[in-house]
Length: 338
Image 1 (cartoon, rainbow, N blue to C red):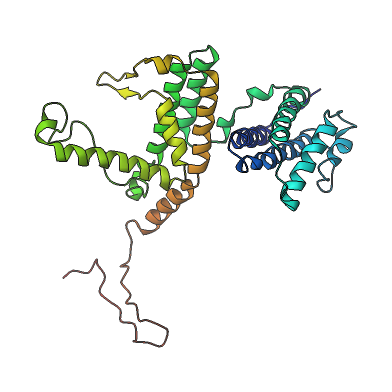
Image 2: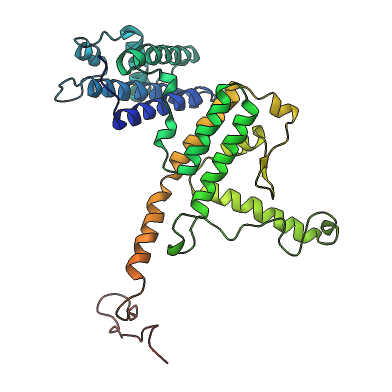
């Protein structure tokens, strides 16, 4: 009987799928950049094998060599594709240690081998399909994760325009999560870059007003674009990928009645499963990259809690230069009455 999946195993499998997806994206790059796909495919399989060992409760003092996993796991399960995986390992060693770039054929063969391996083994060992493992479980942004799951329900029935609209909302929620923040007491977010510009701000620069406020309209458009770009770059998200995402997805607009709509253009109606697959992976990858900012927001909150409503005066200190320089003078506190 297959052991029940615990949260740690689910998260590890989601990470494996993320590494595998990274390899697919890297394989699409021009030579020699696509060579990195071999390492990602290898890392995905190696992490997967370690997860299999953990899940099957196989006693092991230390992780074996890559191909050694086949013998280690054999008493519990007969792993397939040992020979193709050895070729993957050889290609990875040749790249890492000898600087030998894999051919396009080797990369394509590695991708097919890894995909077949995961889709074959996962149901038998873990009791779930590999495609059902959701990388959303790795995200730390609740609203983005919720919208990604809702978008998937539309993709499941083949409505890719609506699914892509959901991905747009999920990505916007990701940026809002860090620019607005969920800790308003701790002060403005360092990822905010100023208040957001709205069409209704006065003076109006849209419609007829754009004729008389042309310069202001240009500055407003620049401010909006610059804010979005700064938020993306500050969070470590790949900007060229953002540009591709914005071009291929429909803009979604909010209305006064609370609805969110997009225009069903020809290019939107022609969106495919591959388009959706790339865009969904991009949003998840962006969320993982942006999660580094969680620690910064937590630090901001901790400092606020430490400094809020002090019982004693803080006082101020004067910088004396190097030790042994001008004696430090205690300055009046900002709380002292003048």
